[in-house]
Length: 334
Image 1 (cartoon, rainbow, N blue to C red):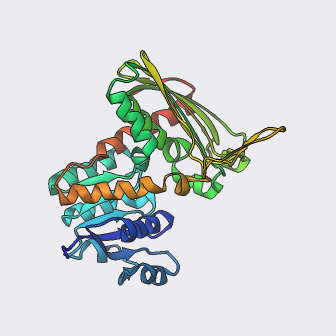
Image 2: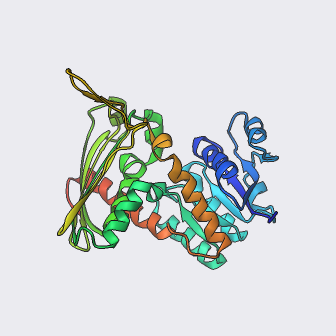
Image 3: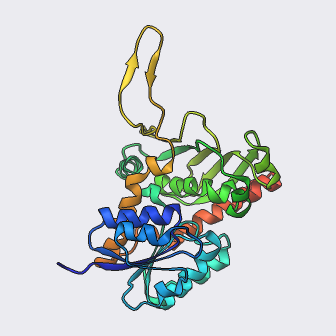
């Protein structure tokens, strides 16, 4: 049997464990050599359950192992840039969860380190691999709606995060909306040149006390002339609300929510169906598998990653502009 790509995972929280289990169960041509997490409980038990022999609290055990060819960085945001740079210097290919950092200059340092080392870096914008959004992008590329005029994105979580998380996350525009900024660029096929954002606290006062908002709307002006409209909420009582509409000169594409099933009950009282899939782990499960398959495929076939550090940087810039717009109450040019 051909030896697969040898992978190390740094960060074994919810997303790190998801990637680990996906690699073991769904990604051929890959093998997990190490899992590292300084704080994770029961790390050894979890590693044993998926057949990984090596685990550690020190990330350097991962990047210093000469057999490790690629590193998945799934640790806290404030460690991403440092781990990326050190991994690149050791010649490791890198998959980094978003954001690479919350500071533009630090992202540029990562970019320089990756280019100097000649390694690949893919950013974890998994929604680009969602089957619905991929179809919408393909139809737009084929010219099925003509020239894009308006891109509408609705993104609402089923439950708000704890205020303590909000304090370290960068806030709604850099933690939650950043996925939508990347998706807007992806769907429209154009970069953003202007941003105007409004936000308010309607769900949890603790989020406001932490210096953030829980309800927001963002208006984007694209370089190709299209307009983007994004609405975000930290709590939709009916479940995870993820919808897109792309309207153009020759047509319109709509992407609806994913549901656990397609059964619809109609009777003399009303028409009923189940709520949308509860949250991102359910809604985007296959996209998480497909993004890691894509990353491994880039290494095996020496291809450029489909989601690059430039995508991470440009989406962060939009997020910073949105945050500044909300704070200052004015449109921000990029």
